[in-house]
Length: 86
Image 1 (spheres, one colour):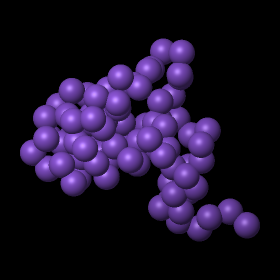
Image 2 (cartoon, rainbow, N blue to C red):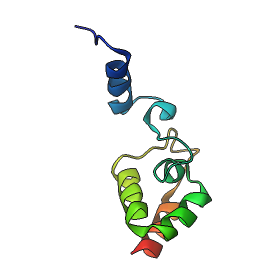
Image 3 (spheres, rainbow, N blue to C red):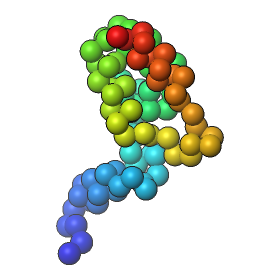
Image 4 (cartoon, rainbow, N blue to C red):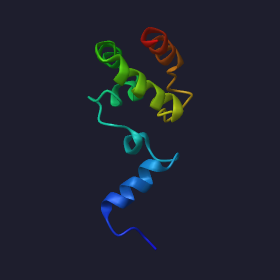
């Protein structure tokens, strides 16, 4: 039976590991959206709120937001962030 509301369709799409990153990412200016995209501003925001920064980083590590691993590589960004937030 298909979902009855657009919100349910969105939830199904965003939970799918094969969904396009725009369907899995948080808004670009949020604490989670910045590290999902590898934005340096995410690090600066995480320094000002380490607990939220660690939570966002753990979510990125648990569910890799990269769309193409050959093009997007964030291990240095995540590793540096983890070391700095420890």
